[in-house]
Image (cartoon, rainbow, N blue to C red; front, side, top):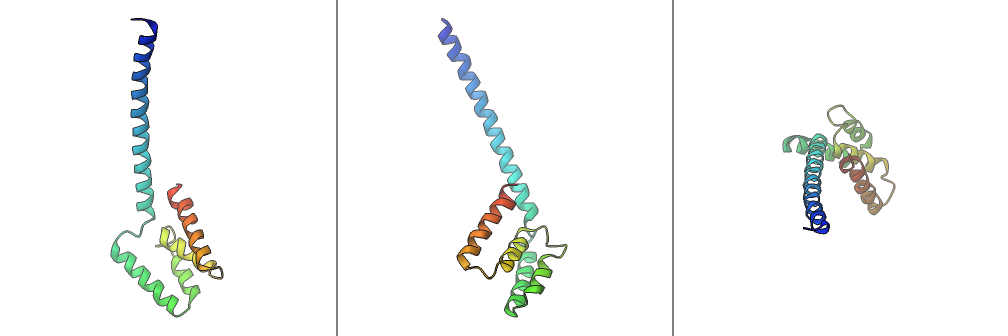
Length: 114
């Protein structure tokens, strides 16, 4: 065997090792993302529905301060949906498309980027 074949054989092994390390890093990223999303979620479907029902009730009455107080209360201030609701209410004077874009950017920055 000449030098070229030996080099290519070892380089091939190195490439497989690098691919395995990249796959493990990808799995770690998926695990971290899943953990962060669960941390920012409401927990159960019943909790989420109860929260959204209360928010809807206040919004029908146009009581934005009550919605802000509810979203800023200790059980909800670290969750994603209340944070996004607060951003939407604070910027309610903007158009719907601008608010949607702002909320999508905020979601990406606060939830997915962590």
